[in-house]
Length: 368
Image (cartoon, rainbow, N blue to C red; front, side):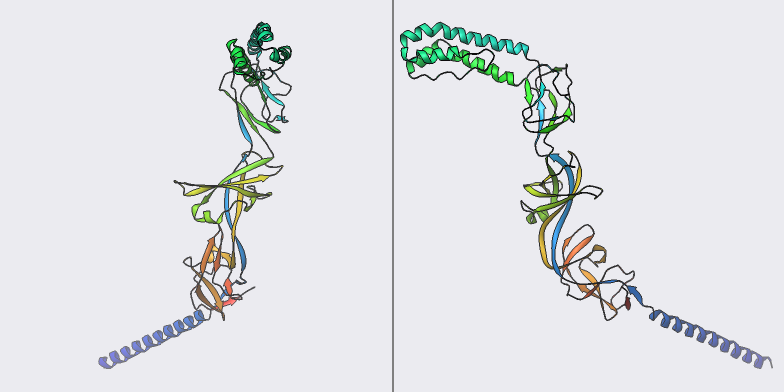
């Protein structure tokens, strides 16, 4: 009797196990069937190949094209001028920027002029006797000497005898000593070589200025240059005269410039070359940070997509008959956020946004 009960219990347990197993199998198949029916929603863009300019983006700080560093070639006390010698002061061309006291130097110059005048006066009687035809020339030069004006050029001699006579009386020596001090006297006054602004002033009126001392900086605020570094792999694309679009950091203002120089030397540490861009603008300032977009060249029959859409840097997903497919493309140029590619067919639909877990053959639904 017990034997039959055990057999019946075993059969019952096996039956229950089979029922449970079948239930699990049915549920699993149902879930798999439901998973296969899920369709991803994707956004696409229709390919329309065209000519795309390749733009190299870089940045740098502005510097004035015309800039001079003021140094003193003489020594003396800085004089007070009509304009304050301070940063931000503007000057017209030829206007005095600063002046150094030259009273002592001027006195020495007058002394040498007097020596020249006396030396000429002493030989006028000899010239009348030995060189009567040259007397009026030298008399006119002697009469024309003005101690308050620069000395005139010494008359030319018409014979070797006259030249030796003048030289023997040290007329040439006195003349060139005067011209030397006159030239040095000009260095006590620094004048503006062009219309500009004083951007740095390192001395104040009344202070002692020493020879070789830096006094400040003076710039022309109308023309600026931007020095930028470009990777050598793009150097063959750059040419003098290329147009450049520049923007400030906030990207609120734009300027137009052009490439005026391309350095042929490569920086060994960064493997870049220097490119110089010239531009003008009222709101530009020395030292301003700008971003430049250089149009290197144009690529025909190309299309631009986001960089994050690339697969292994050489493939893209396209949609064909509501199924994802992957194709090989040729990346031509990488920008900061986009890439210019070739090899796409006009009218094909490329993903415009990345699809997580995308794979070839995935069923998708296009959404506008």
